Amino acid sequence: GVEQDAAEAVQLFRLAAEQGYAMAQSNLGAMLDIGEGVPQNATEAVYWLRLAAIQGLAVAQHNLGAMYDNGRGVQRDAAEAVRWYRLAAEQGLMDAQNSLGNMYVHGEGVAQDDTEAVRWYRLAAEQGHAMGQYNLGAVYDNGKGVPLDDTEAVRWYRLSAAQGLDIAQYNLGGMYFRGEGVPQDDTEAVRWYRLAAEQGLAEAQNSLGFVYLQGEGVKQDDAAAVHWIRLATEQGLSEAQNNLGGMYFNGNGVPQDHAEAVRWYRLAAEQGLAEAQTNLGGMYFNGNGVPKDHAEAAKWYRLGAESGHVGAQSSLGHMVY
Image 1: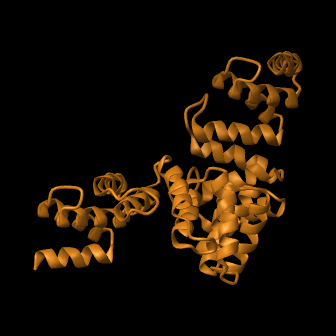
Image 2: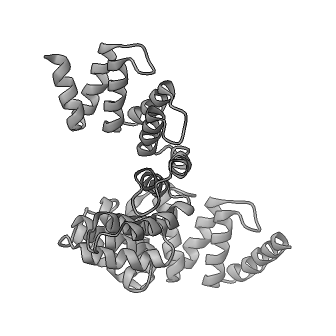
Image 3: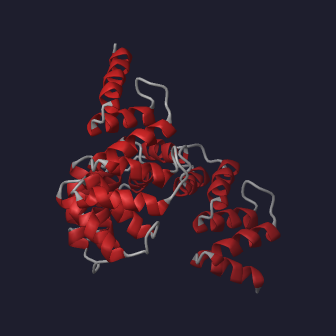
């Protein structure tokens, strides 16, 4: 069977690794890291990856960098991760180029530098690396390290989305939904949201539920809205919890239930979502699903207001005066 094959592969890799073959050392390290065909052992994985990395094998250098990056089998050391990522990236390994870009974005193990991040993301993206393409799209989308350019963002998101990367599909859907870098097109937005939602991306499930609720780009359907939004709440997404609260409040696709609305608003509010804090404040203010409590209402309005929610600021103003 498969497990027996993996165990045999480990034995063969070990024999070759002990004779100094870099690729065998690298493969053995990878199998030890994930525990395939051998008991999982991160420390031993690092040992073999290092031997292969020292021999200049790019894939081993990248994987060793990742061990330092995540603190697996070694003490976490971002500078050491950068050192190994860079060696592999300079050999043209696209995984490493993307990883090095990430280190520059977050300023981990290296001085934060958006321009350098873009340089490495671009090298990975131009080799067809899906995550590199997404990351390059995101920097154009946010104008970090490059001038803001929606058309370029769409171009790179689309290449990544076509490779099946859920977050790129979701972001591309958002660009169609808002008409950024492409003509506004709800139907196209829904198509991309659905692809990402079916892969289990919570943000996409929530957005797909929301378009069903509003009937944008798709026939209005409360039951479908509840289905997708609920899937996102199961992943703990605050925006989805707030949306589900609203559906219980209004009785969209679920029986109207103000106590249940409060429960969902509270989950989202406790995660710091300003809109949910404002909604929860309103429930206490009006005594919907909870006993009327102006002190509790003011507390949640204030939290919402501090997060910049205009409705909360205005509600709090009315309470104070």
